[in-house]
Amino acid sequence: MTSIDHAAHAANTPYPVRFTADGIIFRTATVADPVPDGAQLLTAAGIRDVENYILFAILPNGEFEDIRLGETFDLRAKGIEAFAYFQADRSFNFTIENRQMSWGKNLISGKTLRALAGVDACYSIYLEVRGGHDRLITDADLVDLDGKGIERFITVVSETTEGLGTLPSADQRFLEAHQYVYEILDEAGINGLILKNFPLPPGKFDHDKVDLMIQLPVGYPDASVDMFYTLPWIRLKATGAYASCADVAQFFAGANWQRWSRHADWRPGIDGVRTMVARANLAFEKAC
Image (cartoon, rainbow, N blue to C red; front, side, top):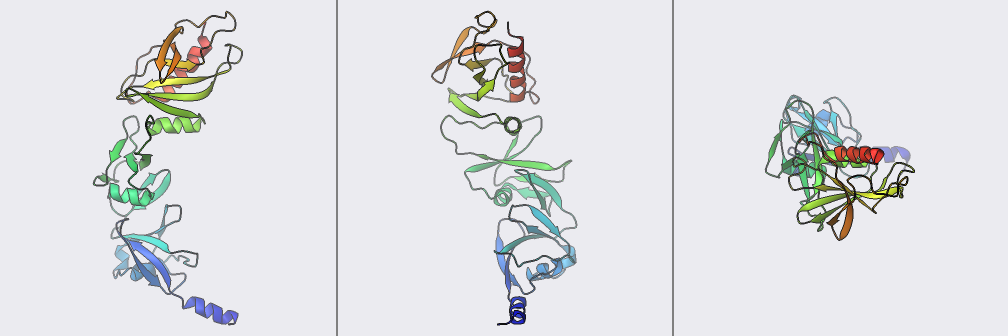
């Protein structure tokens, strides 16, 4: 077969594509043109009045790409391309796990969000609420995307092993941004967030690093967080003594932690792990 024959054969090869109008149910169709425009793709989906619809390509990374009626899309990549279409004149943007997506209706269901995120029932979907509790979105819930700003969703493993809790998304972002290595231990309903190898002010204590524990009570982040704890116990190098109000043991998860009694008002919706880390750093700097 000559190169011309190959080209002719490729031009006549039907390309399988998938279409969805709800993000959940997909149906397969074929398109003869390897580089169709948006109108051709909508026609292949069985749409007649294509001018009344909007079309998105669902990219391999899960993001949505807007395709105008006269804009072409190359189908010659490997695999079956997927598209979403809506009878509407505008789209609504949102993010899920920092991936930008668009939707052709102001309402979107939790079930659709789960399908678009590509996660199964082992994960929970949350709507990020800045300065407050993230809102759990069940499969049956509908979220209005027509509010101010862009709605942001996160997925959280809902089937966790014993002793592992889930932090609010703001805390997770803070810990990840500062590259803290941490674990969460549970005892009697209280979560102990342990930051591993937390650095201390150079030369001030008889250790350079400690495990720093912050106890998160039931109702956190609205419930008040107070003291923090360290292992191993540390003494001031200058005096060989424990710092003021840091000489009492607190038993937690099989270990006696050094309790640092430091108190301040708690501001629900504002304070969190970031606050407690700042308090600990300040206490270590000022310890005497």
